[in-house]
Image 1 (spheres, rainbow, N blue to C red):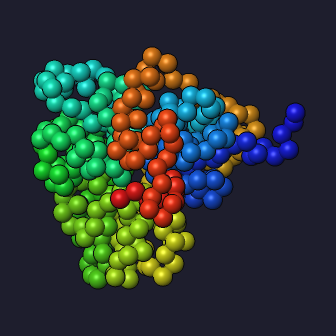
Image 2: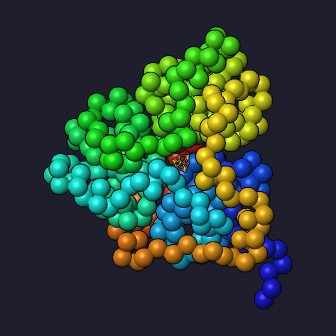
Length: 318
Ligand code: SF4
């Protein structure tokens, strides 16, 4: 039977670093964790993922009964691309018995040889849930340093110099210049920025935490140190705030590869479909499920509900 509307049976998920027009078109906009949870909660047979490959791959691993379409298969994450299975195995051999926590911003094969996954939004809870004094952490050294300061756990980055180039490029000089122009502004940055930048910040948090902070801060001006695409969402949610990007260069080129025409093409053709080797997917799924369990999500029984009876999906994680 012909579909009456190309969107009838599709959920369009857009990462918060996507182009603003793609975000406007999407059914759900969020960070990696929010999109993964929204995909799991949906019963749509087709999921179109506007973002980078690791995100579409993670969703395909979690919902193997659905068709996951990634409109721009060349949109890869520069940080994830540097993480190899050989690098993880070498670190494991050097630190036997030390668990490895891997960001979802990683290839499926790397997840498959990891103990547990995390996102920027739940990294602290995931690490604390392990109850250990030392972990290996891949592939972002800046987030590793942030986790160490927040948990007291020794965090060994794998690879030693892995980082998100977009967040890493923000410099303390960029910040000092802006703070001179906006002396009363609150500087809020993502934990993937360099430690020297984090040291200047009044608030450090994941994308959902930054968005929530914009609502809560007493400052009337906020300097925001993450992808500039988040600012358009923040402006809609907090129109009273003066929002200043920490750098106009903070724009992930891979996240911007997905355009509105490519999403529309994907809706029409239902291609290209993301496929993950089943033997890798099974092992990677275990590491992702462990993360979701910390977040209060059991894939077998579905989402947990909070005290207000509200489904966890759509809420901003701490
Ligand atoms: S923002 Fe950084 S971590 Fe995210 S996809 Fe782009 S390069 Fe990768």
